[in-house]
Length: 256
Image (cartoon, rainbow, N blue to C red; front, side, top):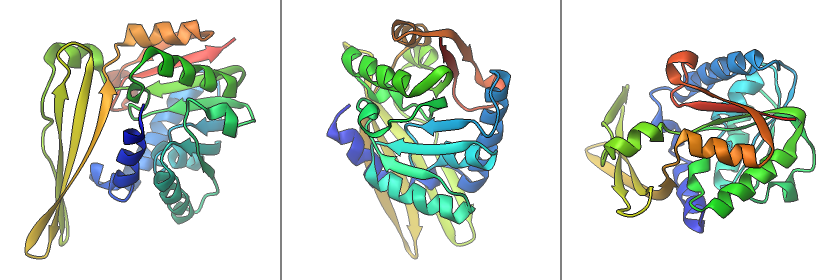
């Protein structure tokens, strides 16, 4: 994970909500979905929960609304600044602070019953060393018998197809119109791709295009499970979208 990743999310933070047709409804919906999954693993509010890749607060706020005692960290300081504002807009109190999850233990000294990292955050870690380091830091932040919840894209399928562009998503609300899509360039030798995220917004009689880029590692589910097991996690289970209603595959694991 490079400085490019931090800059990607710093730049995206002001427009992140435009990825969704209705971000506020998405916050509430994802909170309900993740709460249901967490309860099935034997945990419930007001359990202490850390979202260690919280972005502008999509899952952190959603789970706080469900009654969890939430804290949030993220690599991007600008995303953290916006998350604080959004939590205030929702009328909830969450402690947010910047932290690279490879160095999480430098910032987070408490332990949490639940640690989450959603929205395909772990695949930003392009090397085995970085991924191992992040998972070790997440492990330290988990209390004994604690739960990890993480979501990534369905790379088992994507590596077979290697798409180069995502479908265009178009939104319209009153006079506000915008659309977004992603362009992917795959590395010829490694399971890595560069992503360009385009957001095009209507501005009076013209359109404004914003493009931000980042890199991802297309890690398969069995491969990520091996990293989790090597860190000392157990009860590693994958939950697919058709089971949970969440838009990405989710892995749960426990600290024994």
